[in-house]
Image 1 (cartoon, rainbow, N blue to C red):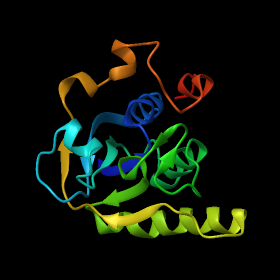
Image 2 (image 1 turned 120 degrees about the vertical axis):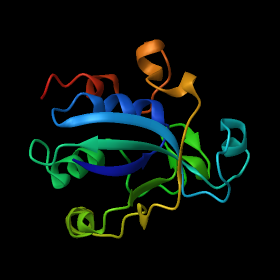
Image 3 (image 1 turned 90 degrees about the vertical axis):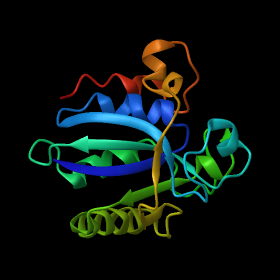
Image 4 (image 1 turned 180 degrees about the vertical axis):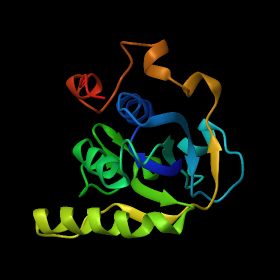
Amino acid sequence: MKTIYLAGGCFWGTEKYFEQFGGVVSTVVGYANGSTENPTYEEVKHGSGHAETVKIEYDEGVIPTEALLSRYFDVIDPLAVNKQGHDEGKQYRTGIYYEDESLLPAIRAEAKKLEEKLGQPIAVEILPLKGFYPAEEYHQKYLDKNPGGYCHIPANMLNLKEV
């Protein structure tokens, strides 16, 4: 099993999106790489510096890191700074965070491939994880609990029927 942390704007849709893929074992939404420990949603909204992030545990034998990241790049605007969809602010920045340095070659390769395709640098942070704190319970599996809830990821991407 491997673990990667992906910040892709609002974490509700990012979590729902990744849950549909075979090999994704678990997801937890939370706050990463900010300046305080155990922030609340209100603190994150008001400048704690954390990114809304999804912790993804996955079986690399079923979904390789490269495939997971390719899927990630399919649903973010990799050129946007502190913004995804209608959500704006530092908490909505994009980022790939890791604890396991063995993931770094795959992360760098996928980022480079995207930059070459776009012909310019991407605005996605690629950094070691500096703290991850699970979000409040009402944020976990939010779009399952609230099917009509807002999401910057198009609805057709949340039900790809792929495993």
